[in-house]
Length: 496
Image (cartoon, rainbow, N blue to C red; front, side):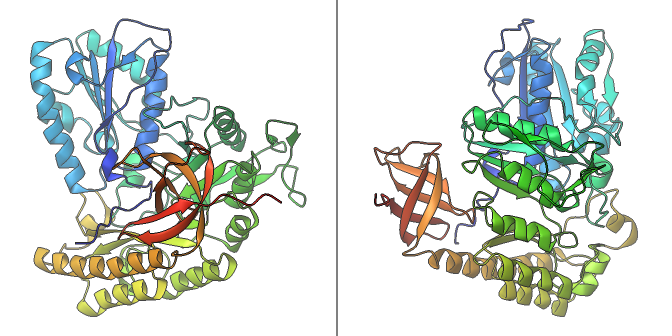
């Protein structure tokens, strides 16, 4: 089977269960923290916030949970297998807690919010259950457990964005960083638990976002990925014109023509503000919603070379009736119009997607519409799943999960096969072309090769060159491809 490990940072399978480590801060209370994360990039970003909060309390991290005084597992409720993985992991922690009865074990994140006190009842090991909006309360909750109590805080907030907390960058290569720009979701897709586990949508202060990106750039980072469940609905209101530093120099206001009295910053504005931090700072974002992505965003992407020409635009289904059942609030024609706009305004832009097969009542003809949509778009990458009913969602309440597993599986195989063809064809189009690549480090297979991503988010591998090192940009001529990777060599620019 063709390797479809997708080079997108929305849900990196290689990081699932990753133990996060930070440098000692100098504040030491003698206790060690072990924290591992599952799910999407937002969860990994949240773990950095948790680490920052507890580092201020003097916790140091450890890679070995057997040596920990506090174990946290940051969870995901999007997929059933993610929940099962977490439950299995908790069982593995049991032996460590038997050896150290004072050890605190906590469940964080979306699964914690959804299952709440059920965790304390069913998983006797668990002492703390904390939802995504309650991380500031962790020191207090740990104190309660130290005093002999179980502790739960899964309250959702309409205001919490953690804008004032500078996340500790965990297990970072010092080049790429996630920056959360908003929290929660208002879309209420019928298959999704996020609105119930992460609460209502709220956007973070634009000043704090640009300040964080500027600080990252000054520390040597060269790529930021702006994170949100639906970045295109970002909207922040200011009573004074937002100001932001450019290349570490003077502050400037929003571009001319904006209303500077009670200004409203939308996502296109924010993209421009972050792009102006420095032309050497690459900007990515995830995830876009087809109902909200505007031509203004596309023109902003086209305007700035350092905004990567890559959009993750989940389609979920290519059939309008199924999209209506999913409560996606767009139809097939709307989605195709947005794709046409991307192709017109940003020629060569990479597009990836999410596809769900076997949603409630989906017919063979409607499944065929999804396949034809894939033919129309020719996606660079795709995340592809069989529908899995999630308790508490609108779909679980309204519709029977009536497609047999064998049918779901067969449809998924057809979707994967179609995407294999498209992904490989997209890579083949890059043969003989020069790619601007941000070097992220050595290839996984050899320290004789560097790896990095091009503008369209495809992985590029090329021999180590003495004039280049990680964190720098290199021009790479693509000479061949595998099914998932571009392979080439550095091309030295000619001096005049």
